Amino acid sequence: MPIPEQDVVRISPPPMTRAESLYIPEVVKGFGTTLRHFFTSFGQGRTSRTMQYPEVRREDLRVEEGGLNKSNFRGVHRLNRDEQGRVKCVACMMCPTICPARCIHIEAAESPWQDREKYPAKFEIDELRCIYCGMCEEACPVDAIELTPEYDIVGASRQEMIFDKEKLLHVYDVTIGGKPM
Ligand code: SF4
Ligand code: SF4
Image: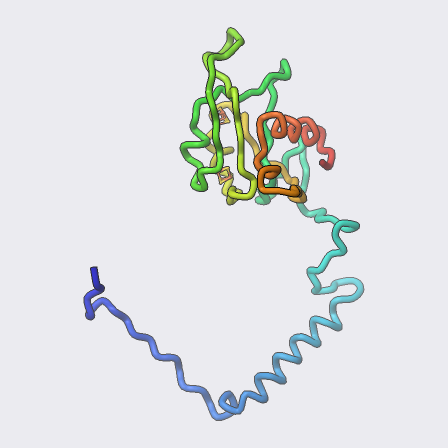
């Protein structure tokens, strides 16, 4: 449906001053900013955000007890284990339902254990499709899925970046002690 003319707001840019219309002063100002950042990028109190990765890694992604970060950074997922080492997930389907990117795929099956009805026979997350919003973590009623501070994951193919249950449990194993992957 076309937008009615009375609802359209037309905005005209403010006219340029005589100095702005010459462009030269603005170009000089721009170079000044570049040079300021160049000369203040060395030594203490530097303004540069460039890091020599991977020799230098982000230290401000605090890893706290349980290998989880309490900052607002959200990295690769892990599937948590219970005290008996089993996958904690009870296949309630809350996380794939709430996921805005539709990147969680679970196949629920009858649980082989007495203390729950279902468990995930298959659990996959497409880490490339994920937007790391953290809603799966928020929705999980049993704290089975969590986002870790790990960010440097690589894969040679798209398929490798689809993390299956074993890989997500492996992320738990290597992050629970706060160890790097
Ligand atoms: S972090 Fe967000 S986008 Fe990624 S799997 Fe969880 S709910 Fe989906
Ligand atoms: S919300 Fe938690 S328990 Fe439910 S399917 Fe997702 S990970 Fe499993």
